[in-house]
Length: 382
Image 1 (tube, rainbow, N blue to C red):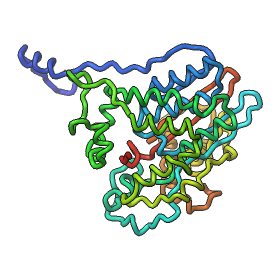
Image 2: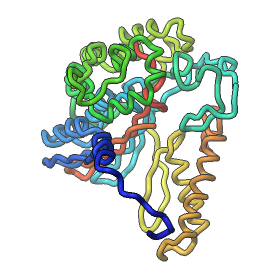
Image 3: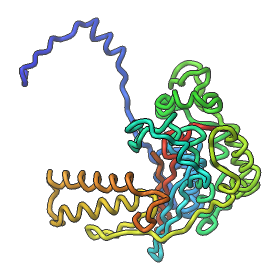
């Protein structure tokens, strides 16, 4: 055989044993056709909820908000109402692009001394230095002021046609039904089993009987209902989004976090506001590329693209191996700058996650990113 290898055919018994151990996987991304526009999201249930809004005559912001709220239930890893995010909206008639910043904010009384460095890196996706007890990425010490509810409600108020209660209705329905325990949900839960086990509430929801559920096992439920999440969303539908920051829900959040090490205060919640900002951009290969400013990936993406253009001035020629190396170098340098220098305390002029894209019948486009920063965020639930 080529390469000098010789393979002895396995016995029939060995072949049967191997076939019994093997599984065949066919992974697809289903699509549903309808009228009124296009919705793209990681989870089909959330995308279908957004597409239904468009089919009923809603606009791109309506659909993006509904999709994101449903994602907080059906995709509780990387996204949720305890996190934050960004939204870009490009008007289909005028072409104007504006951004909405609803990123998380550190508590004002946060003390850096609470996060002593104990190693070179913690193995997390961001490759940050290791902090004692992983306080910067899980548990009460890692919790910031959430921006998602403020951001979604602000987006609806300026550009939506749905009421806040109408936008919440599909997410409430899904919370009552529960997280669908398909193969990917069980995979995500299994990856974080050790962290989820530390909080009794997360353990009860995601690890019933102290184990990760397996798809297709006899007796295993298809859905994991979220009654507490449903109650919270119903309260927000009745009392309004600001209740999350100044009302009954805010009080519940602070009570649940008491004694956890979290520095979040009533003032942190009450003072939080989502902010409309001007988008940033550049022209590349005949395209006008727009991005979010500030602590998003937007500035780093534009930085990497600018670095690549400097490394490869011959626009229009077919890409080759040198171009691939230039891409890698540009991205590496841009993200070294981002992770090493950018932050709330840095120069504002210098400056694991889910994504939703929507285009409505008018041509208006919405790009919305919602994140918990780490899988399952702080791994804390109340």
